[in-house]
Amino acid sequence: MENKTAAQPGDVKKPLGLCLSGGGAIGFAHIGVLQALADNGIEAQAIAGSSMGAIVGTLYAAGYTPREMMQMIKEDRLYLVSKLMSFKPGFWKSGFSTHGTVEKLIRECIPHDSFELLSKKLFICVTNMNTMEWEIKSKGKQLASWVSASASIPGVFEALVKNGIYYLDGGVLNNMPAQPLKEICRAIIGVDVIPFEAPCNMKHPIDAITCTLRGVEHRNSLEGRSLCDHIIEPRAIKKYHEFRFDAYKKIYNQGYKDALAYIEAHPEIKEL
Image 1 (cartoon, rainbow, N blue to C red):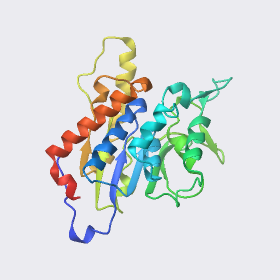
Image 2: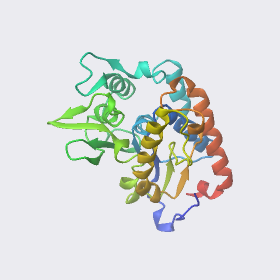
Image 3: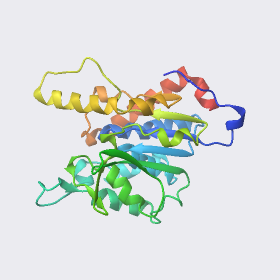
Image 4: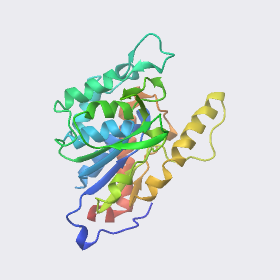
């Protein structure tokens, strides 16, 4: 995607925004993109994310480097799906796994559990199941809870309940939540790890489900994508699916490679 709006002189004091999409294990490509951006002297000061984008974005907002994130994965803290899930009985109630492991990870990495104490401004997208509207969380001392809610895939993780309201994965209704960045940022870089692919592969029955879900995510990403000045689309989705947590190194490498290629093709991104 071409740069739509060059930074204006009056925008210098505004932060550079970064929007990270959801995508399950394919979201490990975000870490590769962050490394490529860092290698080219590009650093965002305001972050927005859904689902896996919320997890990676939160760690980034707290000051963790891409290399440190990769070390967490090697230590099995962000690795296999079994490490992210804590299975429970009675799964038919709201999901077959609690979101406690994700919440524990964030609390361990960010003990203050506060949006305000992060080194970068952070916006987390969640889905309010009572109103069926997406919401942005960016204040208070419940950071870990909101991150885990944003990553609570429907039917997989149980919903987060606060004051009688059920919250699930932000990607359900907004997989590219760039909206809160628009007013405060001089420019926005979007990273969409679930870009639209056509025609869809329909060799097996499960492909229809996968393609449908990805199509829905793409449709609900259009508004957020339209707000981004640059959009990087890692192509790991061509080889891997959302639960290939074991392929984290290859997915990371694909994100890094594709981001470098984008930066080379759009050198103006370095001037944002």
